[in-house]
Length: 325
Ligand code: PBG
Image 1 (cartoon, rainbow, N blue to C red):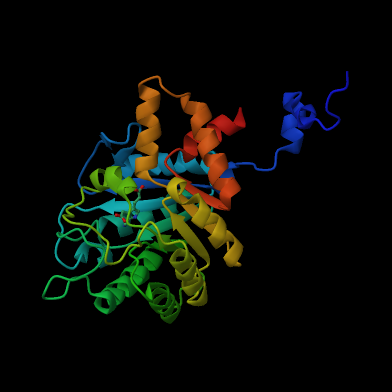
Image 2: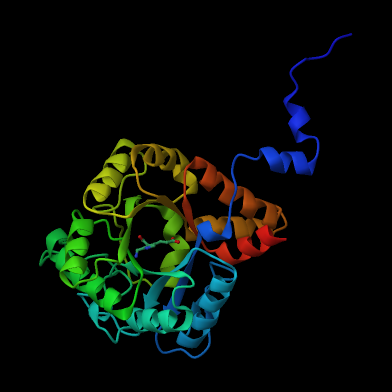
């Protein structure tokens, strides 16, 4: 009796051999931890739809960033939750606004030990919850919003951000921000563009995390989930406008788009493992329906395999600990 000559199972015989031939790795340096900082609180506030994730106070934020740096994470990306909002998102451009003061705090705490990224969008700061300013008849005003983004970019750079991450999906936002930064001598501040960002139900828990005021949806600026060619186009446009990294978001439902973008551009590609993806896995694990730690690592490996050089994930700190053991 003769069996098969070719036996792929041979390379799976021992853990050491499997490790030797593994094609994809996840490393702490490739992970970016999103953090929320809320104005006017002394103690962290849990986010019910994201078990384990909190809205930080200014002081608890520093501890979280210090820990992230110690774990060797690639970066942190900060989101501000202001006490008051208005139609134009004034808190976003105010040097004393919560996001800008938090950036200054964090940079003073960790220096160059970890990359400090600011999410550049005004949806957390507007009373209508949209990512831009509105026209008199209530539409999101693309070009008017670019002026606000330019001012926000200058404020974040002045506060000390290493990198800004425009997430509002306005046309021309990367060029506007690059011009604003360069005009203010912030030529070294880099841009990670949320280039390929879909209108997604998977952002649900994030809206709780930032106390969003949004009613309706973002479909006039975020992309239709069925469009992959357009997703590549958005990434190419952002590279042409000077993006240093581009991003695909969400990650899991768009792994094919991630691969296409990775193959199309010549800059690092990030993917955002978003709040709903986090909540979904955590909820199943809480029921005992899934092996939580294995599922986290499998998720991050899949996103890396699909083409992400950098992964934004709420599990960044925990994954770094899991990978180290
Ligand atoms: C917009 C922004 C959003 C997220 C990151 N930046 C929300 C949105 O576009 O509606 C979502 C992140 C997540 O769901 O984890 N500033």
